[in-house]
Length: 170
Length: 452
Image (cartoon, rainbow over all chains, first blue to last red):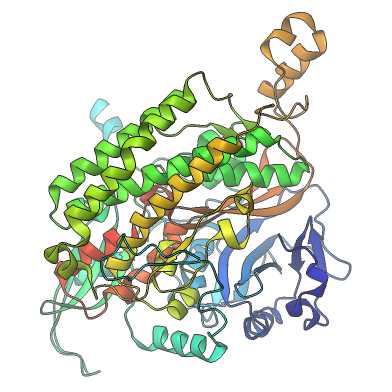
């Protein structure tokens, strides 16, 4: 996809941010504080589109994480996909977010497209995006408790909402 | 490149293959668009519960807002394409702010994907975008293959392209049908469904099902093209172009149709980029961005087709582009028919695809491989990757994290409809309630992939 990514103008600007490759895809690993700044810099460098944002819970992950030296693995990761439409390149950003304090700055003020995906990551993983214009549940009902895509929520543990049929039967 | 001015009487969708407006667009324009998106206050920031409680008359507030009314539209409204609910804030007949409320179809499919093996994965993801299921299967398979580091055989790639383009046709037919129905052209609904049926018959011949095919799988496709596939497809392709002409006659030049769509739901390229909007909506604004051409996958770089763009970014352009894209898909399909090579339809790698049935009778090893693949599944090396394809609705991406087992550790789908819905409040700001239906319809959201 991003062949010859070493020559990508966006990457050269990013001194101090460790870069790894996943196949031919370029992955950046900023720390939590530098992350919004990096996204803003990349936007000025041509990565105009934030195509995707999602979270991953690495709680039960046993394999090596593929992180560069100097980046400490944390429980959560926020993964952002950026596109540079003029040079037709992609970048991915992986930010480590600790499990005991799952907060990270929102990039919605930089990329309005991140608004709904950030709400989804909050809804399903409980990651708090600071500075988000309206962080609320998006897929689940407002009164839902917990964040069902976290790995410590077992599959099938949440009782199904529609109990009406059972009540009628008993 | 050639110009296809036929699909639109006003010449709003012209064929284009150059770099479009991208060279002239500057960061400053993008910044301005972002400022506008934030300052137009089109998004109603209100939770679902609040919207229910406050629905009805709103007294004037200190901020200088006059009398307003909050109205819930949907989720059962027949024109909201499934179960989309809109919370609208109205000033008389005009929409001031709005918010799409989603999640009514949410069944945790991303979590389900973590419980299924890579071989079972396509049965799950195919149910997300149920109008174009093959694209999600394709993106999932491409991501898995990237992690496995395998290349599928030539024939499998061409079959995938063929099936995807037929699927794009059926998906756009569905759009034509529902778009017509939403705007009161009820006969259009019948024609759209009828033409779609011709092609669904072909999909059924090949995959065995009309939708939720589970046909494209990691390692290739589920089965080779059956006897008579070429005649069946050519039969359908002979009819469709003249039917598209009929669509033109029925709608494109018709004054009522134009009055209802032109200048409605306008959005600019810069706003689309800021909101992450892709697909026909982005192209309707004049920006030629199509992953099939700009980041080619399969063999899209070996076929000729035009990326159609519009000028005004309104509902009419989005309609005209989809109509034109159907003609382009037919062009691609005809080229694929000429280039379809012989060979395997799936990779002959015993660790990934089951052995041929005949081998199981004679080889103990083949039997073991077959058993392992269908019980435990094949193992995928650890790592993470993202693969994306151009679905009829925009960029459809699948992000997979593997921990080296036979099930994805995390599977996330970047659903184009989910992201495109963010543009809805901005398109609807200051428009009439009567236009909401036209605008929702032109976004063409499939709620299955929005809610996942």
